Length: 243
Image (cartoon, rainbow, N blue to C red):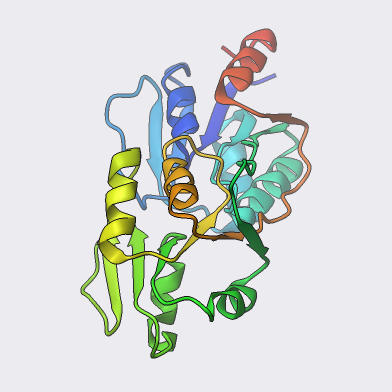
């Protein structure tokens, strides 16, 4: 069996895994964030053209194992990965990071999509969005009584009744407290990514006594093996003879 690995990245744990891969492995990124230049393995940036295109790449490069370590909300990429591995006849492993759990004093309200989010957001005035770029598509829909703060990777020009912040985690607790105080935040909107780099916003919201509207995690495809942490996946690679 070919032991060459293709790792689809997108979260911090994926980068940590990539640092432990052999030189013939490929670390694949969509290209939306910073591209590392100090890895022992190869780095590829860009898409594949769906599941069929990824399957062709796997065959052409002699890949023996596909690892899906993309963001928990990148459902289409995960579906493409599972299907491509099936088409190519190789195993697909996935890093499925567990979500955050509510604690004492939390007021979390789960929403399934943008329509539910909009309805749940109606009573509030100063929301802080931490969903990435999606809210930027709805800036023309901001109600007259609201002012949005949208945090995403890349700063954008301000819009009427909106401030767009460009920032990348990790975010310190004191900085999250300061941001929410500055904008007089009365509701936080978040994905349940489970990332340690961004969880301090939840504590800051708890301390302010404000609710958190949580976008429900999408259903992800079944794969041969699922791991709850990067450390567990690295152990699996070692035990399976992939490293």
